[in-house]
Image (cartoon, rainbow over all chains, first blue to last red; front, side, top):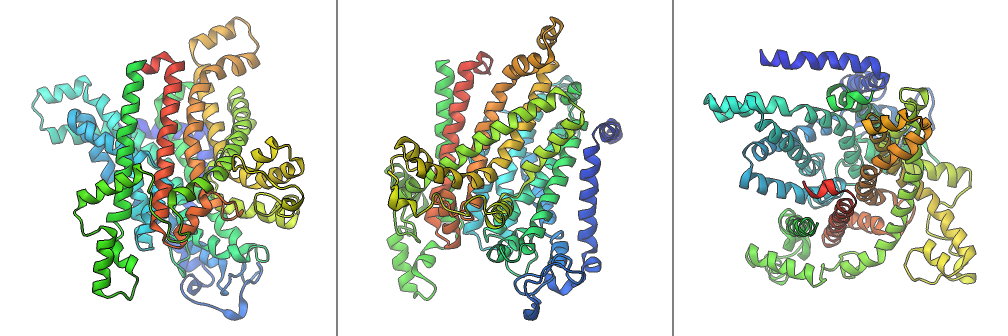
Length: 291
Length: 338
């Protein structure tokens, strides 16, 4: 019942925003394309084995042609196939990072905002410390001391990401906690857990949804940057940032090895930023008056 | 105001203490057994035990934290494994080059972003507005390391318009030696009136600065547009408009004046982000700054150096934010009350 009444205005607002801002459609289309590519990579890739440890020493660094749309890399793998398989890595890392960040950030933020007092003070000072680091830098430091793998990469980025959500939810929850309907709930003796989950959380979560969708591109950029530095994906993995790093040494003679994976990163980050922007316009009532 | 200043400074000190503890966790707790790493892969149990004693890892955690704090305060930030110099002196040598790069990038970012944001806010919903919005999203979504390689390929390798890498033409050192004062080559060349060298340093700065400027330009354009649109809706701006001031003046004088504060605050935040972006760009351009140093320490698993750079940037970031807050409070009395 509550879910329905909360969601309907959001959906109509979304529809209105799509009409007002055609860029959402562009972003959504690219994001859908990336999703489809990720799911159907084995069917779409002309040389699925090249996404793994296959090597073809007889055809290294071939320029783009009909056989190899994006050319081949330094060990002869088809760059097109590898770029397609790359759609299975960065977006999945982004989903995991954002999920962990929400799972840690939301409860802490709710607790800090709703209860206030000492809990609030302690939680917020801890987030202050984490937010004192630029997130790429802190992720870099953690990833550097963990063994290099996609798991370490995901953990390292998630560690830097949750405080943003804690702070966001805390501000919302603190303002919701003082509203009359929440006070009425308290007066009626509704259990605290139920108040938090059924009343405070749904009314605090909209800015978080916007932020998470905006951050999707940011996590993809961070993950590919760390992989570019050699922290994260390791060789046969077709991770886009790693592919750029591997092509760097051959770049002046074989531009295609670097160019196409980099374009994929740019496209993915662009799509999710456009989507997030559109969502913000649709869901953030404060932005509506400015047309 | 005094109360506000004291509170903000105290808060910054608490945060810096937390930052030091967090870097201690990264350096000492997360990597498993630093003593085993120090002793090497083929060390015997006795050698690892000796390394543990030598590194002070046999002491309880509180003692180790206290030691770490003492080291940080007295300027002993450890010895870099790959350069064999004290980490703090390495940072001191590398920081000016990075600072020069970031400042140049921020200047470009503001010079490009503010006019574009104003233009977009002047005609919202127009084609120009859409183009500027897409452009700013592109700047924000750009993988800088890739952008660096692409620009280097086009402008340096293929068109040969700009130098590939480095800070200046090394041949000029013999005819026009650079007098190091600030360690920032462009500034050093300018203050000593060394014009051939100045031209060389400036042309070497263009490509890396453009690459790092992509993000600030995008963010500043978005922020300016949003802020100006917000203030344009406010009653006092409508008042100005109804008094018959031309729309140009309304946007560029009245609306921008109010939008300036948040835009300036954004610039300070973007500063930190750009600083970290140089970590991905400097090694591509052979720029001898913090970024090359950090990338080198990542490649050699040089934990003291990585942790040192992290700590340094975080402390710089806290101070930067503190200054922004204080300046804003001095300019805008509304902030002091919150």
